[in-house]
Amino acid sequence: MTTGIAITLRAAQAADVPALADLYTAAEGAIRVQLGAAPVAHIPALEAWLGNHIDSCVVAEVDGLASGFVEIAAPSELRAIYVAPAAWGRGVAAALHDHAVARLREGGATTASLTVIARNARARRFYERRGWTFSGDDRAREVGGVVLAFARYTRDL
Image 1 (spheres, helix red, strand yellow):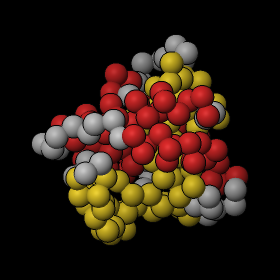
Image 2 (cartoon, helix red, strand yellow; image 1 turned 180 degrees about the horizontal axis):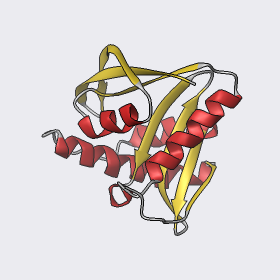
Image 3 (spheres, helix red, strand yellow; image 1 turned 90 degrees about the vertical axis):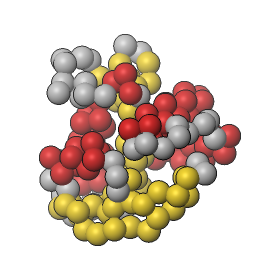
Image 4 (cartoon, rainbow, N blue to C red; image 1 turned 135 degrees about the vertical axis):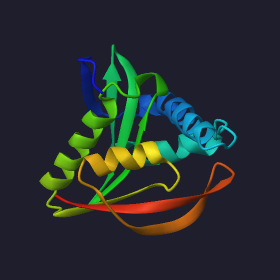
């Protein structure tokens, strides 16, 4: 559900890395609590990872604060959308998603893929409402000290 808030999208910058790492930690932690797992602690290596991927990220701001970000991996992958829990249900994820899909299309992609934590029903519903189709289980991988199973989705652009 959107609330008519003003969302500004902009390219991520190196100065955003600490705020995006905190946002990731809050969002991922909230998701894990919903799944019955321990919340994620701030992972020091996350800032280095974000720094190496900052050029492929777009930030969503609400009231001048980073409220979400998306990583778009050319040529055809929506790698991640993370939204601060306080902004869930306010249209931030939808704005980031729609921007990412448009960028992939502009880059010449005709199909796109993404992975999502398999037990994250909220995220799966979000993507399915936007035309993504479950295309199979993806490999399980360790994220922040916890092994998580992932599901792969695809979408025609």
